[in-house]
Length: 187
Image (cartoon, rainbow, N blue to C red; front, side, top):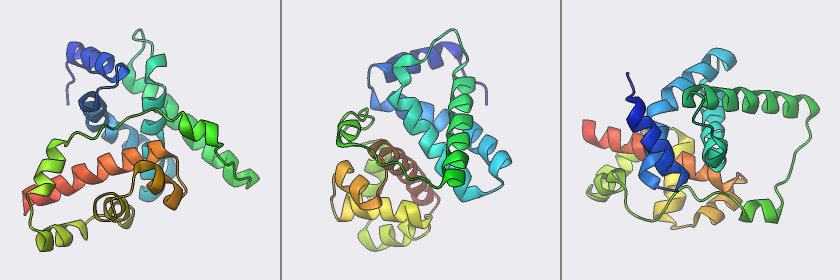
């Protein structure tokens, strides 16, 4: 897929200003590249997906530090490589790091509360069919949709329940909604 450089530059600028649609564009555009890179490294779909989620979480948190003189995809892959190395180090040292309250409160705000096109498609489905469609998602995506839309938990509450950073929850939810919207469109 060829990416229009001007549009990409525009989307990155919008993302730096906190626009939800720009984050979604970047996630949709580069998810495959980062995921496939990690799949080759880890040879494990779940691990590659988790690392990809963490990569976008870190990238969106630090988007204002991205230098336009570099290639965005290369920047993401570098973050992804570092996330993977960090995970290997953590596994090897088996030391768990707790995020402090201060760090948790400084999490970059990725998502806003405006309905996305995926939200609209999901909302138009009848409940029984929607539940069948949700069951086609991987369990981790089913869980985050269940917590957000059926139990109506906040990102912070989901983060605490899953013991994951808020940014990871937001990326997982973005990805889950996109996958669910694709399932709905097919059926």
